[in-house]
Length: 505
Image (cartoon, rainbow, N blue to C red; front, side, top):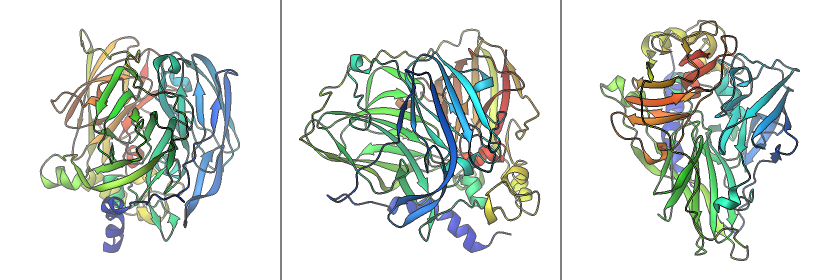
């Protein structure tokens, strides 16, 4: 049985993050951007998975993995047409490389059925036909996704049509166009840890430190004009509500899968793990500001265990994400907000859509309790936290979709290619970020209400509350050998079995 001190250590991460408030000063280091690889001209890029020891900040370090870097990977920029991706696995364990948000066939999707063994190379030709978007890539080994992504096997992939100047959008990488991979990590005595105990599986693994691009306590130095922030919540589980400390508005220009028709003024933007948003901030008045976030509460202790559904209310103190210092000596490329972004509006007419239902389930007290006590072996690197039962073998009885835990050998659905799909996705006990491979969708409703403003554009991941309605159409094929996935993007839930797979033909 779990010791009380282990439970306290694990659950304390729920509250600890709100107290972290990095100070801004003249001596604060500037935030670094990941390396940019522009593959548009050559139509090809190459990444190598490798191990390292990464310095996150003063006194904070840990054993990490990355793609062609010590931690995380470069920003890959691609355009319309075919791009060849070459992935070398230079570490001593199997990985995959899933293109989260790309609308591509199942055979190059990079999910659990496309493993890259140690020392091997995977080549995939990605046919890019979709609109500009900020997508990302990460390892997707079943039962080990949480640990591998947490340790750094992830990065950003930008789809660009080269027309940002026409749209009036900031487009100077690292200058007025910032890529921000936001994560929470858990440190003990200055060392990065990932040792999930039972509460970590229930809530998802939560950290006690916020970081951007693998760095802690950095600041951005920006021109006095319009600035673009490409936000990715790449945490394992934490839901974040972003806003500005000054209270000034943000202007949403893109969601997961593409541009909006026009900028949308918002006071805050909520992102669950796996979700992305692009926002514009007007710094023309030469006023410093700070990107902050609040944790959105999401705990089974607030939901099914306590007799009611969890409510994701914003709570606690503001977390400093990124101080932004305006340098008046720098020239801004854009000084006014754009009007027409040229993005498309997702359809809402359900017509003759084929209907389906999915329920994301956490039968924890039965399946989870059995799994954590002496059954099965640990997945690679899972550590002592699972108390003798591994994520791969012991957890999947209680985490399921439609009553069935994930099985690599079972195809759960056969979907008709090109047929409109209306999915109703339900949750129990808590809220789950729901991701579907190989498609973008419209969010029609969430728990009987209209979707939030940041859910109004094209999405591939959505935080499901109660019953959520999604409308989509699959344009690419996925065979039974290389199927698409649908799953909760709380990575510990996914690894524990809250995932299903389907073919498209």
